[in-house]
Length: 192
Image 1: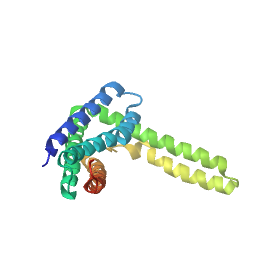
Image 2 (image 1 turned 180 degrees about the vertical axis):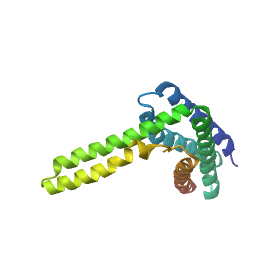
Image 3 (image 1 turned 90 degrees about the vertical axis):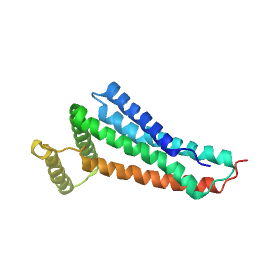
Image 4 (image 1 turned 30 degrees about the vertical axis):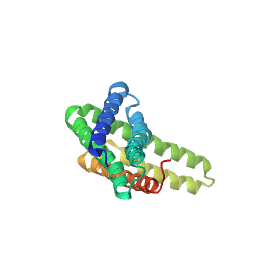
């Protein structure tokens, strides 16, 4: 007795893409990158975990038992399908529909990294005691800041197919680990 995990995956894709478009529409500006990172780090993993949980729980409640394979499949497939379709859609959107949004995200990504480097530098500099340590830190900081020069950043794009593949790999790993956890948890529980 299995539910249709593909249907849950398509629903998850639609919800994910609506969230993506909502962030794009409402936050496409000064804080676009920050909001995007927060949604990707907190909202989407929670959403995917909840869909996987309820996908498996529904079967478990109906049949009063579930084997590992069925639980894994019904947890993994919705997350995999939703994630795969979402990544492809976002890649197409950012690279072919609105390249301005991609440019803004690239710029804000670079600025965020530059600001973090500056924050670490200032924190470390206030902590150091000797002049030699401070000189070494300045040397390292200046070398690191060279990576943010216009020449170094020219043509840098973190929204290429290569980077989306890395991101999808991370999503895939999350899906496998969480599905393994869900399958292990539900196969040994009694619903009453």
